[in-house]
Image 1 (cartoon, rainbow, N blue to C red):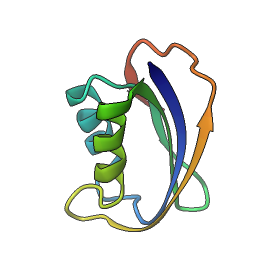
Image 2: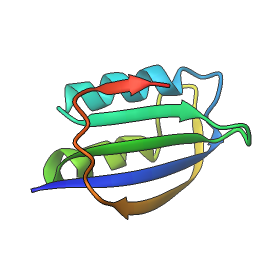
Image 3: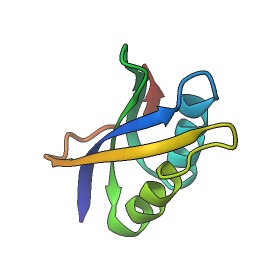
Length: 89
């Protein structure tokens, strides 16, 4: 069964290849959705897929790429929208 998460990522997450790395990780795990930078310095991710892959993805988001310093994740479960790919906005 597919699930959908909205994820707000806080910390040093802009200017550290977070969006591209997120896209690569999501695609590797077969997840779909999008990622974008927000004006407040955070990164916002919408992602959907199967539970095992989603759990692994959330674990990755808690630390991000090598140069990132993730301080906090805010997770909100949402309705599955049926994304077909994972894109950077």
